[in-house]
Length: 275
Image 1 (cartoon, helix red, strand yellow):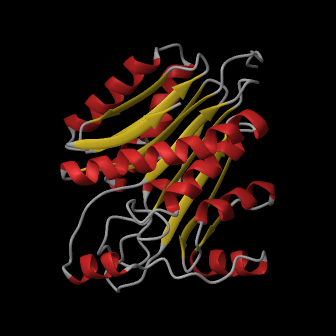
Image 2: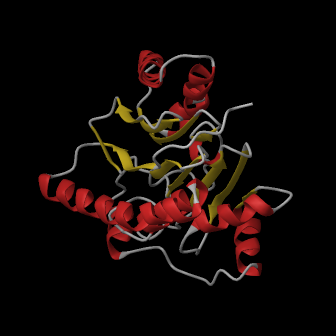
């Protein structure tokens, strides 16, 4: 069992790992991350870690700067299929929607699944569940994401958040629109604890090449090392080194029960912010 401790709540969010954007876009990303933090941190204080990461990721999904929710990349058939996951570290409960369509905030559907018997739903069934629960149809495709698909551009990018509240509860959440132009129905790391994980000691949210993250079970690998007594930074550095040794590319944010919040990547760039 983990001891309950009183501590200063902390929230770390990310806007994805991948190629370095222009200076102008970096500034836009920084401003957007700042705004999301300002909106989500009061929720962390009032309602706790789970509600805070859902709020943060929802805010990132709503901003077309990021590859999640509105403005997500399109799969090779021109359709936006979205994936989001949430893990409550206190309850050790993971929930996710995989390749859900025409929903504004897939993370909110994943949050709702925390209270269901079956916590991971995919494809048409995930969309049907959302409709039955009152989520109205929404088109996440923007003019920019459609143009990118028409150019057959590829890239990486995911959004995520990890929080610890005043009771020491840790939660993590991640949302993605995929890499773009992938085979329809492709499942990314976000759909599993490989990309989103939390327990009573640490929370992790990953971004990058989904298949690489799955092959390395990256989030779980970091969490296992921390749980076994390794320091957070050492656990992240070693796990990224092992990923890089086999050609993997990824980044991650993580937060431990001491409130230490870190972002590490072996990609050109990863945007993040901490409060």
